[in-house]
Figure 1 (cartoon, rainbow, N blue to C red):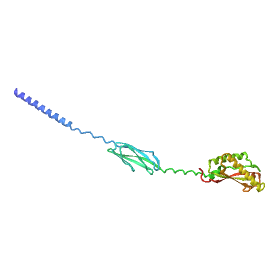
Figure 2: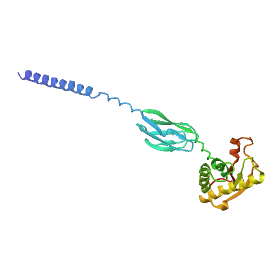
Figure 3: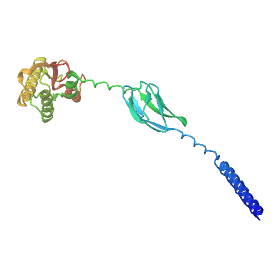
Figure 4: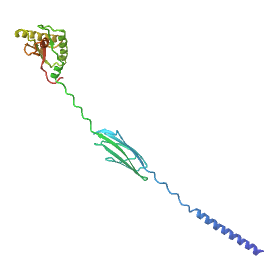
Length: 253
């Protein structure tokens, strides 16, 4: 009986030891599972803009940029290394395409911005200032008379009134008032008639505020005719007080 009990005890201990060895082997196999593979680095992104995109030579445009996943950024031509985001002024002297290169652990990428440069607009030439002689010719009108008369007609008064306005605007102007007649009558008579016509025009201008010391008078009678035909229409053109600029013919003020 004792021998049989001892044999059972030895068999139980042996089975327990075997179970322990098998369990230990299973735990060692589970501990050798490999680590997961790391995810790849994100690729960089970058943008570049120019404001304004069109300028004239000598003017300035502003480059502005931003990026992600980049550790090194460079703008060419002429700018160089820059921060991940920012702006900088540029003054190209010709149309230029700027390129920014962004580099990071995930690779590199580029972006561009173009600045168009045009020649500055040509300065407009200053308008030529008409000289007083030209202005005088454009604005001064003669006073015309009836046959054998030295009295001012209404149309002559209207013309001389506008002449006075011009003369007030250009006080440097000095004038000669020439009296003219048609071809009828003697030379002596027409010289006297022409003088009366010139004096009538001068006195009317004085009444309108033009100083008499700015004006002289002379009579040409029937000499120096404006029209040489022997008709009433032609004679009417010769009966006049003719205003001539004699001083102040430089540039107007």
